[in-house]
Amino acid sequence: MLEGTNDVYGEIMAIQGNYEEILKILDDLECFYGDGIISNEYDRKKVDVLNIDTDQKEQLSVYFLM
Image (tube, rainbow, N blue to C red; front, side, top):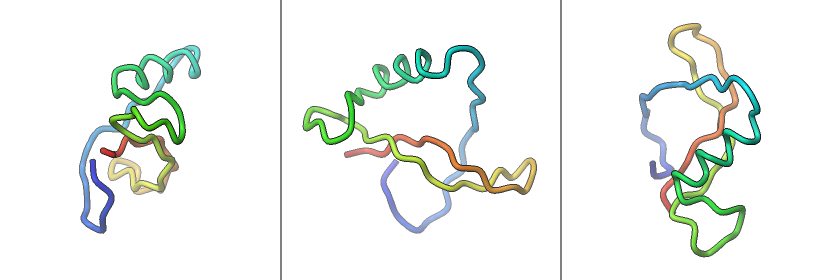
C-alpha cells in the first residue's frame, strides 16, 4: 500500500498466540527487517483504521510499500 488520502478496503486479521513471534513471521513475508533498514521492501506503521463491521476506530499495524 502507498500512503495517501484515499480510502482502502481490506481485511483485519486478529492474531492469536504469541504476537511477537507471529509478527516476526509476517515481517519476513513482507520483507520488513526493522525500522530504518534500507533493504526493507515495506515499512510497517501503526495507523488508525475504521472497522466497518463494528463502526469503531482501531489502531493496527499496516505494511506500506517503500
